[in-house]
Amino acid sequence: MRAIGYYRLNENRPNEPSESLEERFTEYCQRYLHQPVALFGDNTGDAHSTDGNGNGNGSHASRFPEYGRMLEHIIASQSNYLVVVPDSTHLGDDLEEAVRAIIEIESTGCKVICEDDDLPDPLQNALDSLGPNGVSKDRSERIKDSMRKRAMLGKGLGKPPFGYRNGSDGTLEVVEHEADTVRLIYDKYINEGLGLRLIAQYLNERDIVTRRGGRWNMVTIRDILKNPTYTGTYYRFGLRLPKVHEAIINPQIFRQAQDQTKARRPSSRSTNTEPFLLSGLAICAYCDNKMMGVTRRQSWRRKDGNSVQGVYRYYQCQSRNNQSLCGYHTWRANVLESTVLSQLEKLLDSDTAITAQSDVTLKRRSREIQVMWDKRIKNAERRFLLNLKRAARGEFGLGAVHDYLKQLDKARTRAAATDNLLDVGDTISRWDKLPFDEQQAFLLMHVSRIVVRDDSIEVMT
Image (tube, rainbow, N blue to C red; front, side, top):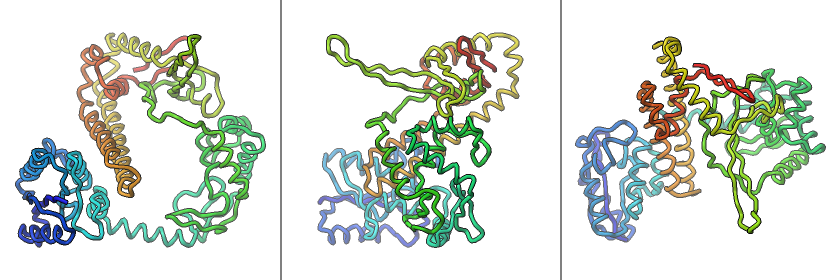
């Protein structure tokens, strides 16, 4: 195959002069019967500035002259080359920057490969040689090694599941009154056929509380029903150690619960649901719990035989949906959101509201929004890393990794735009043209809560 070589000289790699790297590329091509076409090399000292996230002042092509010439050569020749690099560190100083370069090169139809015989795959090589930002590989491996040793002995790691506690020797011990609740949940689910919401309702109505003394919801019930720890089997780091602690649930009953869950699960479910604008702000006036966004899809057939599908979005009391408490209080999403915006606009126009929203309040809200965006950025970074590892294992291609990078870029861009939301009049006049995230950030800055009743709402600034 026709091959192109690329490398970067770096002051941190003094033992890699350009002549040595050129020889390695030639030897690699000879060993694997590739035809060397061209070799490009950059000096990182000549690179343009970067923002620390691999973005720089444009793509890699605008920051590294020889890298840019390589891309120009590939595009002009209209050929699919094998692009050979010594290792992934020659494509970036951190994991994200290297992955961006790999995506950029492979988008031309070329294939990137590393000279490293043990880790030729560039994604696997990048994960091994660069790893997540701010994480010491040696320290991380020491921690994992210690955790693996504990896992091999069946000792608990972290918080034990409901029904157990960590014993003095580190293994799980049964907490009997919690174990009775676990058995009750399985009995209601398997023998009485109750769903997650009705089981939560049953427990809450009888004042049976969680470990922290709180109310049960669908998520906590679901987690108990799918946790194999209750069968006395320990799962961690790929290990499966049976009978290392006392079982609360018979393995046959556990399998029956899994089969029942699989049979109840809908055959298809959309996971690409649009977020709701008032999430975290709308509060049910009747129970003081949050209103959650719900999307429902319904299909029907007209008299003429054509199939029609409708999508319905609304806010519903979270207590009702997750815990079967409170009443059936709902608002259509578009109606509630437009009513909130109309009421907020009037409040922000009034002198009393402007006085009430002092600079101190706005600055505090601004800090809260920044914290929110920091969390979103960290979550986007986490999703990128997790799915990069999946791509490195061959579960899917680079296209999916690129999508997660786009989500990360979007979160960073939205966070940077937060300071532009202080001009109330300008923001509201451009409301329909604003991205969803800027609309939500504006509401979080100027609204403390929205109390929702069946026939009215109250916006509090």
